[in-house]
Image (cartoon, rainbow, N blue to C red; front, side):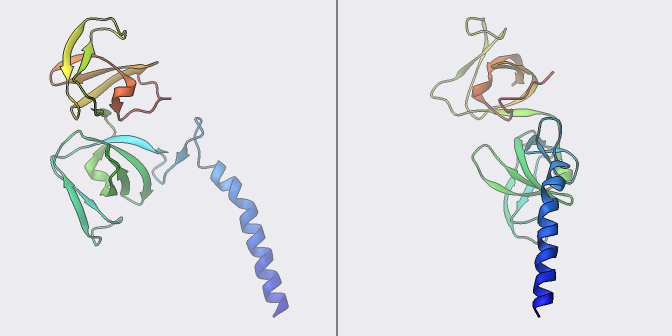
Length: 175
């Protein structure tokens, strides 16, 4: 009996000592964890369909939580299980979606603001105003550098401060 416990403990210690190496092998050059797909976690994606189901777990046997009806809506992938992605939306709601309902094209949503936000013709606070954007508008991300992102929203193209967008990380530089 003592021999079995000792052998089991030795095996457990051996497995635990290997964990840091396996975790290190699952990160990319930015020290971001990689999911089963080989893509970084977390990451932003967009809904590829007009209707997309969100489930409680990673499979069609899990109950339906809700349904998105907005193609291009940005979501954050926080986990992966096979062909299923655990996603989070801009309001913090989470659930699981099949990977076929998501695409890598980058979109963002205008964060909640007291007033409409000015979309500018250059990445500067004093630049001319192209349009005013309401909270909740979905925009296609074109480029992000420093504190500004170039977006296309409602047939207008211009620059908006990064802090007003949900769907892009502070450290990201998009070309």
